[in-house]
Image (cartoon, rainbow, N blue to C red; front, side, top):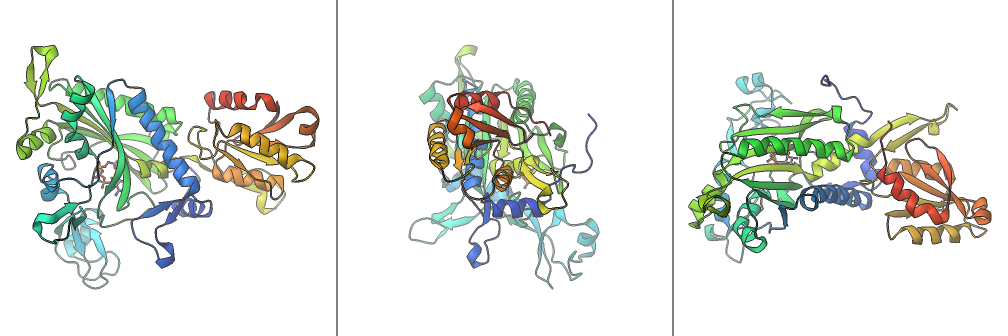
Length: 456
Ligand code: ATP
């Protein structure tokens, strides 16, 4: 497959941001006060979508792998953790400020000629020298504000896994190779937050750390690259919008032996979605050193050999995955040629497993008992599916609202339903409609979800 050079879809960041707000996926944090940079609130549809994406990842990583255990570690950790991990010393971005317009830039993200001439890319004013800026949010815990009370908001979820590795071996009798999976919030004082929820100061990560015997790390690194690629295929993502990017010597973290990013072709170009890293024995070695605790694994399958395991990390952004899925699903389609505004529809072609609402139940009319019948159907379906109910407005307009929310199925109750106990099942992608007996609806939806193939 030749690589795409330009974004092929209909989404733009403006359209996605505006749809997200209009339909209650994502709102700006503290909007009534002018908004808080780098923070976003997930509305009714957004939290459902985020939960589904997290659920798909969790299922893939834990339920489908007998040797991967779950964890939910605290956000606040002992400050020594961040010394051992290298974050206190090294988790920095190069920063420059414009003395004139006060804009702040990441030095590695502005054109080199601006950096060389110390000229602001926005206003032409003079730039300061580059300085290191630590991305960790720092606060104080307890009543005293002194160096002994310093506490950090975790900048990644991985360290919570490393410090619990022995607990999990002991409590779950894990044997190498094994993994620990975690989904949770992380915080980074990003110098530049832009592109909606792509890069934020508060975000969520989905990380799985796989502990392996030294010498088998390259094999497991390749295996996890394969599995993570296959995962996105399973999610129904446009595979020509994904590619691998291997870290060059200049990008490779000091502890990493090899690292690849899975990049997605967003409307603003190819950007990192997830990283697969061979972190070697660096992390556990450092925690051994800083905590004084022995982090060696005793390999009963290899004459009680003792070693510090190597770690293969798969680290994906959950909130970044939400943006990817929104961009991937976004489509605009001409559905009529009447010269009206509603000749076009906006549709989110979510996989039914990810769609915030699986089915919407719509009575054609409120009167004549159709609404009551539709409410009965909603109650019947709600145990198995996320169901919406909407009885107001023209039916065509209600379909469009559901298309825009990415609801894959609409169930319409009409006068015929009263006579023969059937309903119309409308498919979001093809807009086709079929008649289905109410008694078969739950099973039919299950079948449709299982066999779903994206057609456009
Ligand atoms: P970048 O170089 O873009 O700052 P990174 O390489 O430091 O990111 P990692 O530390 O490897 O990113 O984090 C793993 C994943 O967490 C990333 O692939 C991304 O999906 C997500 N992520 C990292 N930083 C942010 C952020 N500020 N906002 C949203 N998601 C993020």
